[in-house]
Amino acid sequence: LTINNSNTGTDVVTACDSYLWIDGNTYTESNNTATHILTNAADCDSVVTIDLTINNSNTGTDVITACDTYTWIDGNTYTTSNNTATHTLLNAANCDSVVTLDLTINNSNTGTDVITACDTYTWIDGNTYTTSNNTATHTLLNAADCDSVVTLDLTINNSNTGTDVITACDTYTWIDGISYTTSNNTATHTLLNAANCDSVVTLDLTIEDGYFPIATCPGDQEGNLDASCNFILPDYTLLAQATGSCSSLTVLQSPATGSIISESSYITLTAADGNGNISKCSFYLSLYDKDNPTVTCPSDDILILDQYCEAVVLDYTTNSTIVNTCSTTTNITQIPQAGTIYSIEGTVDMKIIIIDDNGNSDSCYFQVLIEKDDLSGCLTEMVINDLITPNGDGKNDYWIIHEPSFIRGCTVMVLNRWGQKVFESKNYENTWDGTYNNTPLPDGSYYYFIQCNSKTQYKGGLTILR
Image 1 (cartoon, rainbow, N blue to C red):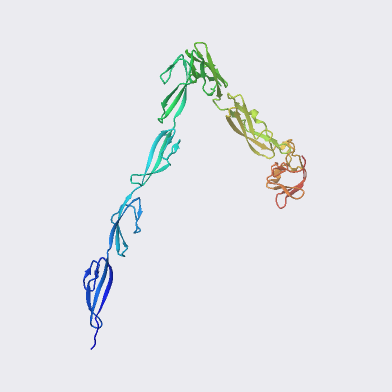
Image 2 (image 1 turned 135 degrees about the horizontal axis):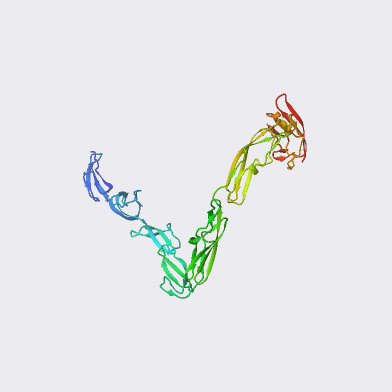
């Protein structure tokens, strides 16, 4: 005989909300009485008792009020109200806990406080402003308990003061409605200026009985002389102001209107009242030529080279015809000026300029032909000076090569005693005055060298003596 034993056991289970056991039943509550018979390995009954613990899931609502934005437990940032979002957590029984969001988003707001005030204004930030301001801000809590940022837009208009200076005869009724019979400099009256702020005016009233007249002249005037160098005075009294006097006023002009004058002078205006009181003022009348000066040049001229092949320009201004103007001073200039020396034949353009004392000018042109006369004794061979005295006395100030036509196209050089070149020119025209780089050379011996071609050369010594 083989005896096999039945056995028993307990199935300990923990589940959330419900549990389907081996007996095919779904349990929604804890249970420790249900049993189920199985066959064990020995083919005997095995009775199993359930020890079931049912833990419940739960749900909840997260009620939140926030300003502008809110980041919830689900990691999302909400900018508007929301009552549908959910998130699942594990509760203390290790079962799902589903939380639903009930979010109310209240918005912050901004605004501008537009204010116009006179002189000063104390704002909600506690500051007193004396100038216009559109940058100051202040933060308040709005009805939703969120920030409300207010920007100030303040315009400060200024009150002003002024003095009403008045001179009257006997009595004067001012803007305050009061008639004053004596002088007064203390009365004030308040008006609203253009900015709607107080404008306090102080009276400066002088009450006089027969006070003196006052003449005020215009500024300096200008006029043009006519063809006869005359100017007829207009009526300048129309430009003058005559104030004052409790009696009638007249304005007189000296020299009188219609007077003929020919030079700049002062004009006097006189204000006189019926009581013999007078006031004078003067202004300067500047007269100018009506027409510019004119100059007529002489005819073309011929100058003959002397024995040294030199021709001196004459003073042609004395031969010019000048039309005088009304100006008392004229300046006549000749270019090239009288005394200029030319050593070669050719044509020289001459110019005569006249300028009057008002800066008006005129000019004319003519030509001077410089030529050589066989009877003049002009040297026919080249003569090279070996001494110059450039001291500014007008004599022998330049190195002269007589009959320079012999060396036209040649290179002219001057060297110092060490062989340094201090002057060089082609087509030399007798203009070197013993300088190097615009600096006078020291007295002493120098050497000239004239190279015309490979076969024609001139050389010699040259002394500078100041």
